[in-house]
Image (cartoon, rainbow, N blue to C red):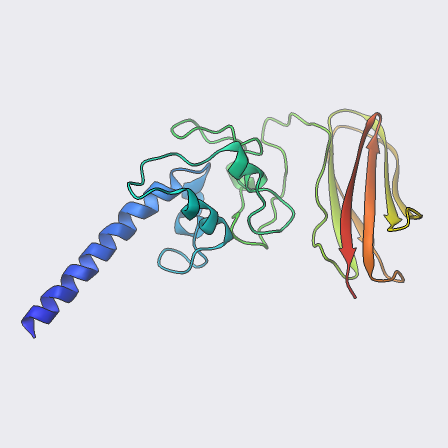
Length: 216
C-alpha cells in the first residue's frame, strides 16, 4: 500500500512539474500571452483540453520546448474561425513580435484566439496608424444580421455594397465621405433568401470584396 501511495505521489509531482513548466513556456511565446495564462491555449485553463489555438501551438512545440513558434504564418491563421486572425486577436496582425521584446498594441484590446466568441474590439494597434482594410463579417454564417468592419487610412469617399451570387446589387450600406478610423456596419438580411452573398468595399482606389453566407 505504501509503495502504491509513493508511486502515486511521484506521478502527481511529475505531472505538476510538467504543467508548471509548460504553462509559462507557452504563454511566454505569444504576444500578451500572460494576459490569459493557460486559457491562451486551453479551453478552461491548464489541464483542460486544448482549444483551437492551442492545437496549432502544440503542432509547433518540440519535445525540449525551447523554440519560439510565433511567426507571421501563425499570426495569419484564424484558428477559432471567428473571422479574425490570431494576430489580430493578440494585437500583432503581422506576426512581427519577437519573444523578449515589449508586447505590441493595446493589452486592453487583446482577446483569446482560442475562443470563437473573443472578437477583438480593434483591428489596429494603439499607435492608431490606420491602413485600408476590410475584415471578415461576424458572425458568418449569419441569420438574419451580421456586422462588417473596415478601416480607413485617411479621409475617402466610401461605398459598401452587398451583392448576391449572380452579381446583382442587393443593398448599399455606405456611400459617403468618411475620415480615417475604424468603422462597423450592421447588415440585416431579413427578406433575403439563404445563400452566398458578397460585400464590396471601396475607398478611393482601394477595392476589396469578401464572401458571406446567409443560413435560414
